[in-house]
Image (tube, rainbow, N blue to C red; front, side):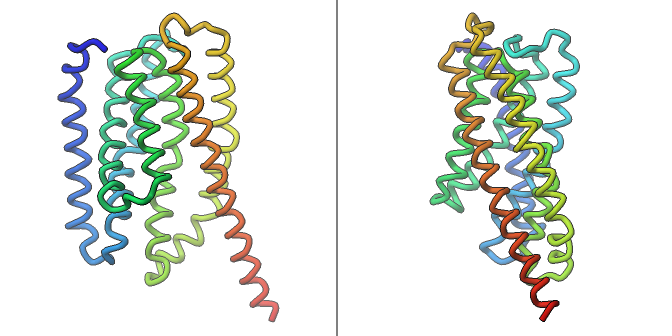
Length: 249
């Protein structure tokens, strides 16, 4: 790791982390003070996710389009590194959120640690491959706005009628959109990524242990995502069947 590059990035990381921290504090103490104590942390996490997900997608797309030499092992541009720093800061903040409020949630903590490993190795270890990582970031975060809205509605659907309506209306299209991205687009891109790296075309700049770990993390994340949304589809079917049965009676 080149120390000058590391030190020059610290101001960006620190600024982005403070940005997400301040938003979290505002959400926790000013936006959701009337929410139940067990819901306020999750709701605050959704708010910082709003400020990360869609902006990160826009930043990532812009950074990739501005790089005419992009490929699976091209050197990271300054803009791409900034996007990686932005996401690293977000996941560090959300990881802190889970460690403080949900220390037993091993699945999400593991997910965040693994995601940080991918971003950090791309940004600070190999300095190449941001194209692959940012496309994966786009696929991961393109559903975040809808997912966060759905999550907030789900949290209050039991005691707020409007939240229940939003949850009911949003669930089918959200599940469908999420399924297409995580079940089709994601696996297809990972297949292309794996095929490229297996060919050895990137071995001179991205060590095999790095890209193998990237692929392992991404495949694991996609598998868990598919299982999660599959369970949601099953629950939706059961709820609709139960409502239909009640009407018939």
